[in-house]
Length: 167
Image (cartoon, rainbow, N blue to C red; front, top):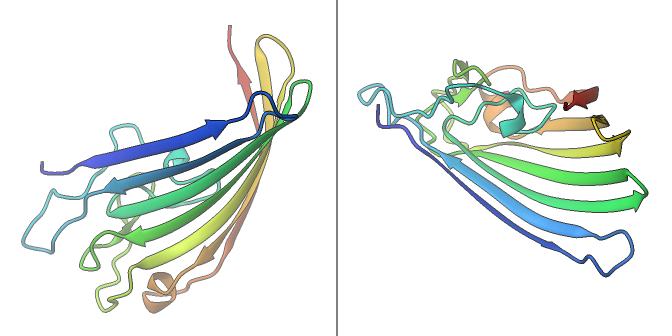
């Protein structure tokens, strides 16, 4: 295996302002194969999760550059709003676009395009108590040129409700 992944996260919070706004920028970069003659270079996470690339995304982190600005604000009490914007590029145009579980989602062999798409996301979180957090999330994936050049390339809307209980 010659696969790798790197992550960076910068954030700034103003605790003395109303709503305690937070602005940040996150970026992920993960390896992709150089071609059919160089296998085992695409990063595949040992425990795949859609949280690598956003709640509504079907993309996995393999062969991906993922840049996302983040804006968070406390609306009052235990209610928080977080807005994110995701932008995705293939690291190597010679490699596929991968699904969350690591299998190729699109091979895109005839496409030199690298921009996979972008996705705005909003999450409204409520800390319902010491142990329970509820979140309403929504996103819409807008495909870039890689997807339509390799097959159907339609948008994808996601709306979900999450509950987290910690004891």
